[in-house]
Length: 372
Image (cartoon, rainbow, N blue to C red; front, side):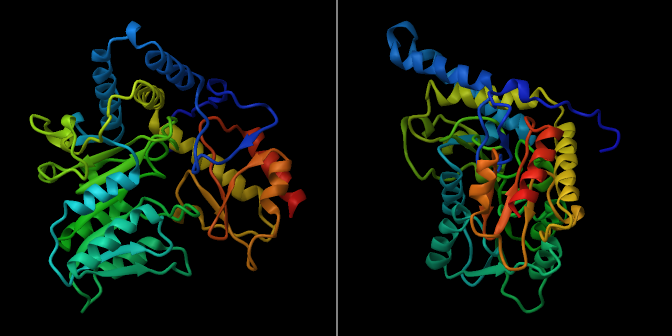
């Protein structure tokens, strides 16, 4: 990271007032001006369809698909356009042939959309759900590695993992975990919601069977659109919804495309957000987010809030916990000071992005000192 050219703040690309400190990218991002303008142009397409031939819309789908593929190191043919990550995860679960008696591995307090479809799969196929409890030392990776290789455990059938815990950014190191999953002969399904657009996501390195991410968080796009990567050997499955666009001769992961794909509003918004992010140096974005979350952590020392050490948390999310729980009314007091963040499972979750500057960090620290 030290050799990466520092990335300047990109707040000028957004419409964030000076008195707003928005540290909630992990919930959803504000739209850059260019993305909003793309959406407004798309509304006009639907408002005045006689002026805009529908034949032009499929090109927008391929533009968005190609940008999403570039972001994760995939080919466009390997990426489906779906309506949500839950749609993607349901598609993945429906296309995994697993033998009864195996394990589905995940972390405790996982995001529900990564759980429900695999809970159903476990009931239907006689699988055991194993949730790795939150480790006292914060080392999710070591705990998961121990679970994968535990002697006498049922065979690992599927690992459903994320690059960090969604509640507080606890690091789940897929560079170490993916090879262990593959060595166990299990399928790997990755929810990259809290990673794509903030930290490197590389399907060539992790080799997942399926991987998904939405556009409304770190990739600066709209709500209601997501992408599903399917490995080559997983592209001959069945979609969970049948439509004209995903039937033969649809090729590759397009077999999983959602219905009503050719949305003149969401597709150009998603493509514009992805292309904006791709125009930046991804490594510089990650390095900047690390500096901002480290600075937040350093500024809050002595306030009775604890965070995982830097080497055990993702660069883009800082989760803070208090011994007796967060004080009542803390989030309301922060909002009154113009600081917008989230409380997730007892953690104050601070998640800056490219619009955040050092002044925002200082004002957040000051607001927390007053609130606490």
